[in-house]
Image (cartoon, rainbow, N blue to C red; front, side, top):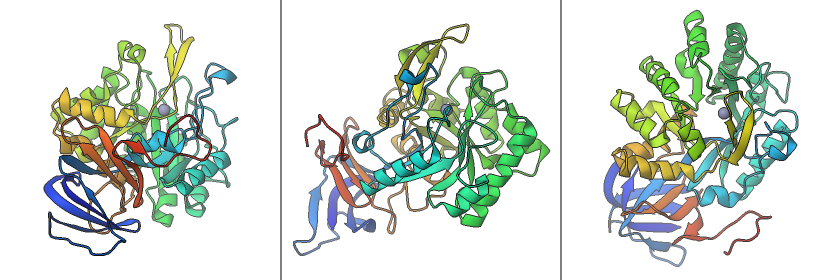
Length: 394
Ligand code: ZN
């Protein structure tokens, strides 16, 4: 058991100074400071005066086995390690394939998800990849979602991108309906994660499906909406119709110079346009390649997405873009958890999973990480790393 004392608690709503009691994997009490006293050697007290306590971050898009490869085999990005998540404050993540579903496979994705979970994180996956027809483990998307516990949706399915399979409306609608039914029959989100590229069509392929069918707009979870101001503007209209919008936190100076809207700034713009924080999320796109194409579409260079970008963008949203801290925290905790139907994640309340972060109140630097009730980082010291990680002091 752990008793975390005197932290200012953001559930992600600011509920002031509280004490939190953790037993096993669960938060078992949230009380006024000093109200709980636990006797016995089994309970470790953590004094957290001057700290902010938040839920562990929920990252809805991570290429956990790597991604990329758009510039040939040497440009395939590496797998992530446990500490890549812990040092980023990410305790729940959704693993996906990407452009490449030939040399990257769903069995490999599931095995990596299981490995990260054995090491302490909570990991789910999407079946499929960029392409339609979707790459699946069984015969169909609905079978994958119903029969495999870790699959909660499909994606990221690419639209409006030269790397997509150029799906037509009927293909996209059929894929979405299968995903929806798979989600309904298994009690999962059954959501379609959509990679939106930089072609003129923006979000129109989704809107066409929604207007031509009975599928609700919330069936789709489009990402990279801050890719350009034009796409962000389309995202505002999409959100006004009730849709979700996911902003990508990982970036490079070159990508920003090419017209991407910084994630924190895009959040501020969406909020100013009246979009609810419950419809907005950040994801890291961790371990994706961050390609830099020239005007002719030739690849000039590649970098790798980082999970730490999530908390960096939360800090910038607060410090630069003047977004209230509880709103900035909502888009990396409760909003993605709710959209993905992970009801025990992304919140601090009695009965929720004990995924918790302590941040320094003055500069929001990460100090302590609990994942499923286990202390993974404390006083900025990493306490646990993956089995094959090297070169880091513990
Ligand atoms: Zn993508």
